Length: 146
Image (cartoon, rainbow, N blue to C red; front, side, top):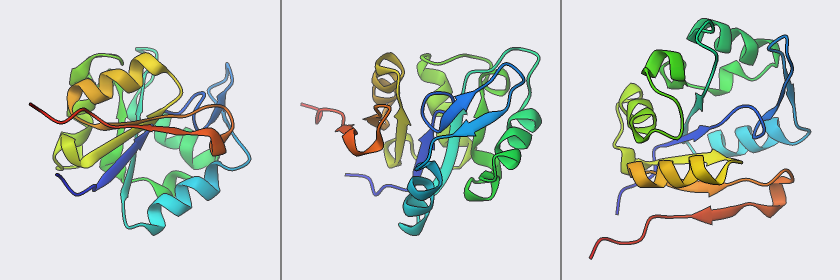
């Protein structure tokens, strides 16, 4: 069993709502959740699908404008543009783990889309399917290999 080292979050629908001007409006408890995960000495990152015209710097700026960029590892901000594929492709989750130089099995992906959480699990991560209200999260872990 791998020791957990990193937690990757989806942005839109998980950390908050992203408006058409690409501004992130955090959910009320997002900062508390992120700070709590950081307090467990886990590295934080994001894995997010973005339009082809949006780069990592723009996502980092969006996180900074929302006041949470300092909670994330700079190398852990992973966009579909940077990775060359979009969620739910398994490769983007592996790319994210590689970006932080940790084993994919030592990572957790948190998102609100069941297909994306299942893909993260398929890539070797642990998964947490987040509902709109944080207290109703359901942890999902891969089945042990036979």
